[in-house]
Length: 542
Image (cartoon, rainbow, N blue to C red; front, side, top):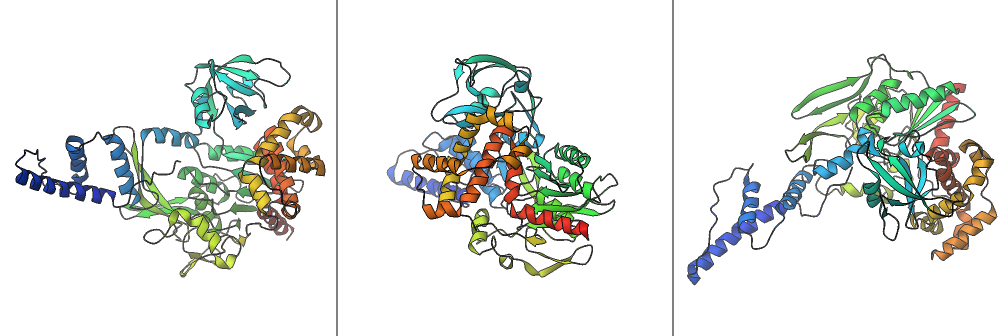
């Protein structure tokens, strides 16, 4: 979801009213001394509920310059709500449409995953079963026009591309395609259709029977997607499961409850909500869970929020599995969506989420706390590197189902802490990654060698096992980095060489096989995943 606008001071509504009232008194005084006429706007005694409306009407009728009243109203509403807590906010009608797509789980379009490379729209992969796949659009195709209008060039943005490619189901768009091996561009007519937005980014199984499922959001179809992925892994011999919720910012509460229900026996507590005007409501597991007995580890980090934290809290408090990683974000406020007549809405906090043991998931906020810069604060006091630096409220002790002590203080603290890996970090790696140079080079190699790679490696698993990033390819990357004005420091390059090679290999895999290939390679050197898989294997052996 889009971040709320923060352009106005928290005191803007108050200052606005005071300034206007003061201006009226000054104006009256000038009129009495100069003898000139001055229109005076009569304000009736306002109640607290309509004072702001009266002031905005005053601006509309009396202010010296033209004012965009609707925009001003939006800003004032946003500012008032943001003073309540970090997650109450006003959302415009346009923002609602954009925010609903990832949670509803679909949109209307042509069905391609694309990237803008060198000011050109390049197809990373057509969505399986989508309109583009049906008409033969391939990975690596360049989309250069839509309905005769050019969509390539300097400063082309993702938003501009989507504006051209998305549209109502059943409508048609003619796209201009430039393809390797064909000397001239050609046109393809595509009828737009429903395109799924997937929650499962990757699902795979290793040779030892450890399954891995990566969830990137909690949308309407998340539970269905998870069951389909888990059932497929089970058929392949899955003996244990690592569920990756790192970086998953949450979504629909019901999807989180349904997923937790897969792992918990009937009657177990999952989560409850309670607020000043919201009576306690409990969510409990039912008999429908299909994975109540499988050994389970859940990966979490500072990007795991809301629905992800509900899953983590339910698993931990019921002693159902192992949490591995770092403390979660700490977003445990329940927002009620209140639509307004103009299709905009207010999302206002009405309750808090509590884990089965009674812990509030929400971390502290308010005066003196820089809520939005929490990640920098965690890095500053060492929490990302040392478990002893995690702030916990030891005055608030809670007990899991089997009697383990857990603490309040916001967020969910893992059972096994895995610090951020800095052993191979360097300025060179940082520059390669954040400048986009590594991503661009990975794309170029995949684009150049796509046919050769697909002919040699039938699956991403074969590529992961057999392909090696050699010295020659790394030297090519160094030379390309130099053309992008990135300083190649010899010591840094040596220190980060293994990490650079892994990320380069993963980038190539993503551009050829999609996210499944990308995550398969990154997991080979992922300390949290490796620790979780090791612990699960030991549990079974015992």
